[in-house]
Image (cartoon, rainbow, N blue to C red; front, top):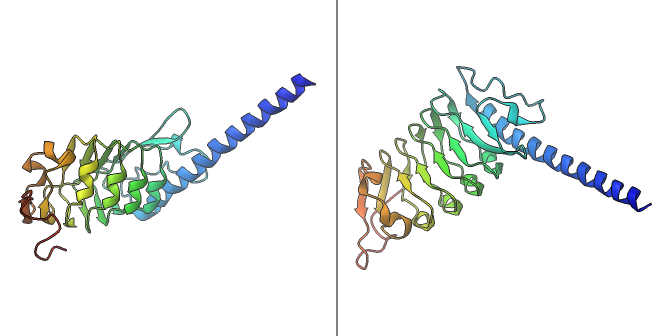
Length: 218
Protein backbone atom coordinates (compact mmCIF):
# COMPACT_ATOMS: atom_id res chain seq x y z
CA UNK A 1 0.00 0.00 0.00
CA UNK A 2 2.83 2.38 0.85
CA UNK A 3 4.39 1.79 -2.57
CA UNK A 4 1.08 2.58 -4.29
CA UNK A 5 0.65 5.72 -2.21
CA UNK A 6 4.16 6.88 -3.11
CA UNK A 7 3.49 6.09 -6.77
CA UNK A 8 0.31 8.18 -6.76
CA UNK A 9 2.10 11.06 -5.05
CA UNK A 10 4.87 10.94 -7.64
CA UNK A 11 2.35 10.81 -10.47
CA UNK A 12 0.46 13.78 -9.04
CA UNK A 13 3.71 15.75 -8.72
CA UNK A 14 4.64 15.02 -12.34
CA UNK A 15 1.20 16.06 -13.55
CA UNK A 16 1.33 19.31 -11.59
CA UNK A 17 4.82 20.04 -12.93
CA UNK A 18 3.66 19.41 -16.49
CA UNK A 19 0.60 21.60 -16.03
CA UNK A 20 2.73 24.39 -14.55
CA UNK A 21 5.22 24.24 -17.43
CA UNK A 22 2.39 24.25 -19.98
CA UNK A 23 0.71 27.22 -18.28
CA UNK A 24 3.97 29.19 -18.29
CA UNK A 25 4.62 28.32 -21.94
CA UNK A 26 1.09 29.39 -22.91
CA UNK A 27 1.38 32.65 -20.98
CA UNK A 28 4.74 33.52 -22.52
CA UNK A 29 3.55 32.47 -25.96
CA UNK A 30 0.56 34.79 -25.57
CA UNK A 31 2.87 37.65 -24.57
CA UNK A 32 5.10 37.15 -27.59
CA UNK A 33 2.15 36.78 -29.93
CA UNK A 34 0.76 40.07 -28.63
CA UNK A 35 3.99 41.64 -29.87
CA UNK A 36 3.67 39.94 -33.24
CA UNK A 37 0.19 41.43 -33.65
CA UNK A 38 1.49 44.90 -32.75
CA UNK A 39 4.24 45.05 -35.40
CA UNK A 40 4.56 44.91 -39.16
CA UNK A 41 7.03 42.31 -40.34
CA UNK A 42 7.85 42.84 -44.04
CA UNK A 43 10.60 40.21 -44.09
CA UNK A 44 8.56 37.50 -42.35
CA UNK A 45 11.06 37.01 -39.51
CA UNK A 46 8.15 36.20 -37.17
CA UNK A 47 6.51 33.74 -39.54
CA UNK A 48 7.25 30.80 -37.24
CA UNK A 49 5.42 32.47 -34.31
CA UNK A 50 2.39 30.19 -34.44
CA UNK A 51 -0.09 30.77 -31.58
CA UNK A 52 -1.52 27.25 -32.00
CA UNK A 53 1.74 25.76 -30.71
CA UNK A 54 1.86 25.21 -26.95
CA UNK A 55 5.54 26.04 -26.68
CA UNK A 56 7.07 29.29 -28.07
CA UNK A 57 10.53 27.79 -27.62
CA UNK A 58 10.26 26.35 -31.14
CA UNK A 59 9.84 29.84 -32.64
CA UNK A 60 12.74 31.46 -34.48
CA UNK A 61 14.60 34.25 -32.63
CA UNK A 62 13.35 32.94 -29.25
CA UNK A 63 15.68 31.15 -26.81
CA UNK A 64 14.49 29.21 -23.76
CA UNK A 65 16.03 27.58 -20.70
CA UNK A 66 15.67 23.96 -19.56
CA UNK A 67 12.24 24.74 -18.09
CA UNK A 68 10.97 26.03 -21.44
CA UNK A 69 10.90 29.61 -20.17
CA UNK A 70 11.89 32.37 -22.58
CA UNK A 71 15.34 33.82 -21.83
CA UNK A 72 16.26 35.66 -25.05
CA UNK A 73 14.44 37.59 -27.73
CA UNK A 74 16.79 38.40 -30.62
CA UNK A 75 15.12 40.68 -33.15
CA UNK A 76 17.77 43.28 -33.79
CA UNK A 77 17.85 44.80 -37.29
CA UNK A 78 14.75 42.82 -38.31
CA UNK A 79 13.02 45.75 -40.08
CA UNK A 80 10.06 45.55 -37.71
CA UNK A 81 7.76 48.55 -37.37
CA UNK A 82 5.05 49.15 -34.80
CA UNK A 83 5.06 49.47 -31.03
CA UNK A 84 6.26 47.65 -27.96
CA UNK A 85 3.55 45.90 -25.97
CA UNK A 86 3.16 45.80 -22.17
CA UNK A 87 2.72 42.01 -22.34
CA UNK A 88 6.49 41.68 -22.77
CA UNK A 89 6.73 42.39 -19.04
CA UNK A 90 5.34 38.90 -18.38
CA UNK A 91 8.53 37.19 -19.56
CA UNK A 92 9.89 36.77 -16.05
CA UNK A 93 13.05 34.87 -17.01
CA UNK A 94 13.94 37.01 -20.00
CA UNK A 95 17.61 37.99 -19.82
CA UNK A 96 18.16 39.61 -23.22
CA UNK A 97 15.66 41.84 -25.02
CA UNK A 98 17.29 42.76 -28.32
CA UNK A 99 15.09 44.98 -30.50
CA UNK A 100 17.67 47.45 -31.75
CA UNK A 101 17.78 48.95 -35.27
CA UNK A 102 14.13 48.57 -36.15
CA UNK A 103 11.42 51.16 -36.73
CA UNK A 104 9.58 50.87 -33.44
CA UNK A 105 7.48 53.83 -32.34
CA UNK A 106 5.52 54.86 -29.26
CA UNK A 107 6.64 54.69 -25.66
CA UNK A 108 8.66 52.17 -23.64
CA UNK A 109 6.09 50.24 -21.57
CA UNK A 110 6.59 50.67 -17.84
CA UNK A 111 5.75 46.96 -17.54
CA UNK A 112 9.28 46.17 -18.74
CA UNK A 113 10.25 46.95 -15.15
CA UNK A 114 8.81 43.53 -14.31
CA UNK A 115 11.55 41.69 -16.22
CA UNK A 116 13.42 40.82 -13.03
CA UNK A 117 15.96 38.57 -14.77
CA UNK A 118 16.88 41.05 -17.51
CA UNK A 119 20.60 41.59 -18.13
CA UNK A 120 20.49 43.51 -21.41
CA UNK A 121 17.87 45.91 -22.79
CA UNK A 122 18.78 47.09 -26.29
CA UNK A 123 16.26 49.40 -27.93
CA UNK A 124 18.70 51.72 -29.69
CA UNK A 125 18.18 53.09 -33.21
CA UNK A 126 14.39 53.10 -33.25
CA UNK A 127 11.85 55.95 -33.18
CA UNK A 128 10.64 55.54 -29.61
CA UNK A 129 9.08 58.56 -27.91
CA UNK A 130 7.96 59.52 -24.43
CA UNK A 131 10.01 59.31 -21.26
CA UNK A 132 12.32 56.64 -19.86
CA UNK A 133 10.20 54.68 -17.36
CA UNK A 134 11.42 54.93 -13.77
CA UNK A 135 10.21 51.32 -13.41
CA UNK A 136 13.41 50.19 -15.17
CA UNK A 137 15.14 50.85 -11.85
CA UNK A 138 13.60 47.57 -10.63
CA UNK A 139 15.82 45.58 -13.00
CA UNK A 140 18.41 44.67 -10.40
CA UNK A 141 20.32 42.33 -12.74
CA UNK A 142 20.56 44.82 -15.60
CA UNK A 143 24.08 45.38 -16.96
CA UNK A 144 23.42 46.94 -20.37
CA UNK A 145 20.83 49.64 -21.03
CA UNK A 146 21.07 51.11 -24.53
CA UNK A 147 18.32 53.51 -25.54
CA UNK A 148 20.38 55.78 -27.78
CA UNK A 149 19.23 57.18 -31.11
CA UNK A 150 15.52 57.45 -30.42
CA UNK A 151 13.26 60.44 -29.76
CA UNK A 152 12.95 60.07 -25.99
CA UNK A 153 12.06 63.15 -23.95
CA UNK A 154 11.82 64.19 -20.31
CA UNK A 155 14.30 63.73 -17.48
CA UNK A 156 16.58 60.76 -16.94
CA UNK A 157 15.04 59.00 -13.92
CA UNK A 158 17.25 59.40 -10.88
CA UNK A 159 16.07 55.97 -9.74
CA UNK A 160 18.29 54.38 -12.41
CA UNK A 161 21.34 55.20 -10.28
CA UNK A 162 20.23 52.34 -8.01
CA UNK A 163 21.04 49.76 -10.70
CA UNK A 164 24.05 48.31 -8.93
CA UNK A 165 25.07 45.94 -11.74
CA UNK A 166 24.84 48.52 -14.52
CA UNK A 167 27.99 48.59 -16.67
CA UNK A 168 26.85 50.38 -19.82
CA UNK A 169 24.23 53.10 -20.17
CA UNK A 170 23.70 54.90 -23.47
CA UNK A 171 20.92 57.45 -23.79
CA UNK A 172 22.75 59.64 -26.31
CA UNK A 173 21.06 61.08 -29.42
CA UNK A 174 17.63 61.70 -27.90
CA UNK A 175 15.80 64.83 -26.72
CA UNK A 176 16.23 64.37 -22.97
CA UNK A 177 16.34 67.42 -20.74
CA UNK A 178 17.29 68.62 -17.27
CA UNK A 179 20.44 67.35 -15.59
CA UNK A 180 21.69 63.84 -14.89
CA UNK A 181 22.89 62.36 -11.65
CA UNK A 182 26.52 61.47 -11.00
CA UNK A 183 25.84 59.24 -7.99
CA UNK A 184 25.42 55.49 -7.59
CA UNK A 185 25.96 53.46 -10.75
CA UNK A 186 26.09 56.71 -12.77
CA UNK A 187 29.34 57.69 -11.04
CA UNK A 188 31.24 55.31 -13.34
CA UNK A 189 29.74 56.66 -16.56
CA UNK A 190 31.32 59.20 -18.88
CA UNK A 191 29.46 62.07 -20.48
CA UNK A 192 29.56 60.08 -23.74
CA UNK A 193 26.58 58.16 -22.36
CA UNK A 194 24.50 61.35 -22.49
CA UNK A 195 25.82 63.27 -25.51
CA UNK A 196 23.71 64.82 -28.26
CA UNK A 197 20.68 65.62 -26.15
CA UNK A 198 20.39 69.34 -27.00
CA UNK A 199 18.22 70.16 -23.96
CA UNK A 200 20.27 68.18 -21.46
CA UNK A 201 22.10 70.64 -19.21
CA UNK A 202 24.88 68.33 -18.04
CA UNK A 203 25.65 66.68 -14.69
CA UNK A 204 23.96 67.94 -11.57
CA UNK A 205 26.10 70.04 -9.25
CA UNK A 206 26.05 68.25 -5.93
CA UNK A 207 25.23 70.60 -3.07
CA UNK A 208 24.26 73.47 -5.36
CA UNK A 209 21.47 72.42 -7.68
CA UNK A 210 18.74 70.00 -6.77
CA UNK A 211 18.18 67.30 -9.38
CA UNK A 212 14.46 67.95 -9.83
CA UNK A 213 14.51 71.73 -9.98
CA UNK A 214 14.96 73.80 -13.08
CA UNK A 215 13.19 75.12 -16.12
CA UNK A 216 10.47 73.40 -18.06
CA UNK A 217 11.40 69.84 -18.95
CA UNK A 218 8.79 67.71 -20.65
